[in-house]
Length: 451
Image (cartoon, rainbow, N blue to C red):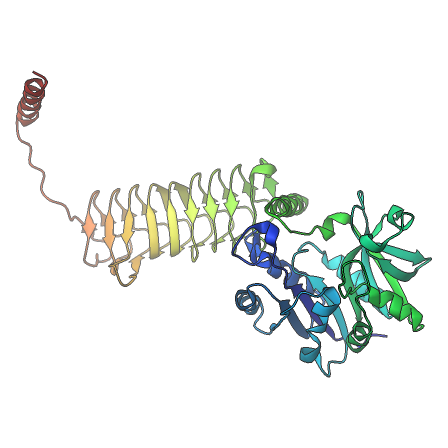
């Protein structure tokens, strides 16, 4: 029954008034990615050939975000909110002539698992319409799936359900999969004669059944169908994501010393035998190779940490930080857009930005690469096995050669040749007895003021 081609239709038109926000609901982030991106990523496992996002409130921002995550995404606006069937119908012009299945996803339901979508696709090979359901612990006001054996005969919304139907615990998630042409044909037959006066996508099941077509439902875990409609829901969604992501890391052999204190992004990758100490935060774009150690209270984003490296405690790795094998980045060190080669050490209270640090180099405490002149960023290059003395200021652009040194407290404004030592500080002058005389004078002034 299926050609193999798939189009995703992601409904993202809701205003989300309960979020109490100027930001469209579907752009609120979970694990560093907007809800919309989570839905797009979930559908991506089907390798869709078309992607249509149905936007409404904040459509321009939603379109921009969709294209950021997938340049092939097409956006259409649902100007009036007339129900889910009406929302899906807005995608019809963009899928004109498309020969394949259409899967309807919801941008505010971000946790559908790839295995679940695979099961829907498998069921589609045997039925004309497939709906995703779940056994609800508390069915509340969900729509109910009315089954006859394996056949789904209809979906009834809570508002329109009888008392007997409301006792059913198999509920509707909203996800639907069908041949695209059939889906839009069924939607054309949907009316709005119901308690809400809306065009329900769920009505296509009863219409299909009346036409002699087959419909079925598969069930997923209720946690996958978690919807986000408020800030409280958003917090619960974040907690659910973190719990699942932490469990997956533990399963693949990553040590999380205090799992509940580690926060991961949607794309965090950590290799086996790595150790993550308590209170570490991962922003988007982080890769940690096997056997690395990230110590407590560190914050990482947009960076790559190689095998055997150690980061922290209290370190910050910003986008563009590349740490080679066995690098040490220690407490209160910040690294940004810098490459630190194998075995190099930046252990204390330093800022390394827009820089290249050669293998085996030691960077002393309090070192700063002065990379910004107020308009442009400039790069600092430090060679292999160099020794950078504590409290060195490297005023970029500048190069320190292999095996070179800088004296403590030096301000480096010119290139340092390989093997040389740079000293750039004023001569010390000791004034005998000055400290005592100076303090006596200050104390006398203070006493005079008090009188």
